[in-house]
Each structure stands twice: as structure tokens, then as C-alpha cells.
Amino acid sequence: MSRGSTRGWRPDHPYADDARPQVAFTQNMDQMLRAADRDRDEVTEILREHYAQGRLTLEEFGERSAAAMAARTMGELQALTADLPASAEPENTAWSRTRMRWIAVAGVVATAIVLGIVTYAGHFALAWPTWLVILVAIRLLHGRRRTPHLRGSHEGRHAP
Image 1 (cartoon, rainbow, N blue to C red):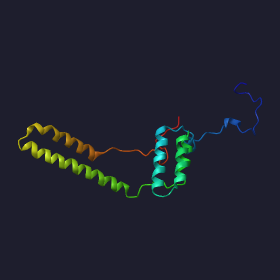
Image 2: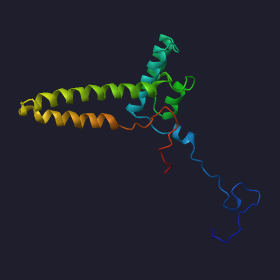
Image 3: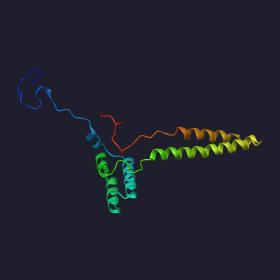
């Protein structure tokens, strides 16, 4: 049928005037994505946290963990945690992480000070560890940025 032809055309047809339904790339599309081993492991860890806090019984934890390991799509994994709060961690987790980072930095800085005192007291053979410890302290101060994975939506993923 040529482009300008009206043969077989019906104005009441759902695809009249090329008004084809558009596929919306929404969260439903994310649910169809295949799950990786890392995704299954993360869901199992989330379930373990909720079990430890008493939100799941041992039987529920076992069933959901087995289902997580057998899941093929992200939707199957999301269904396993849908009735659980978004985070099993306490609300002061960000503060706790910051505190732990500063404790680690304080330990590294204390080590650098001790090494500096020993080095400058006449034992110059130990000078290189001081710089190494200082570099580690700088790395700890800056830390790594983590992206949430599977705990929320997949805003980082793009539709093809």
C-alpha cells in the first residue's frame, strides 16, 4: 500500500493517522531489566538487616533470600522488599559514618605525628612512612562517593 493510499483505512481504527501508542519508559521498564548477581546479593543483605531488626521472621527471611537468589528481573527483587521500610539502618547513619571517618582520620594523623617525631628525632630512615600516612589521611578525609543501588529508583539508567 502506497503512502497516500486510503485503501483499508478506517477513521475509527486505533492506529488512524499513525496515532500509535507510545511506550512510556517508566519504573515498569526498570522492573523488566535482568538482575545481576550483585543485585541479588544487595537484596539479600537488605533482607538480612531487616531480619536483624526483627521485621522478618526466620522463615520469612529464608523464603525471601531463596527467592532473591532465584530472581531473574529487577521487578522480582523489588517485590521482595516492597513491604519493608526503605532503609533498615538507623536514621543517624550519616552522622555515624561521618564520626567513624573522623575517628579513622584521627588514628592516621596520630600515627603520622608519632612517625614524624621519631623521624625528626634522628631516625631519618623512617621518613617515607610519614608521607604515606599523610596521603592515607587525605584519602580518608575526602572519602568515596557512593551511589544508591537498588534502594530506590534507578534514575541513573537511561532508556535505549
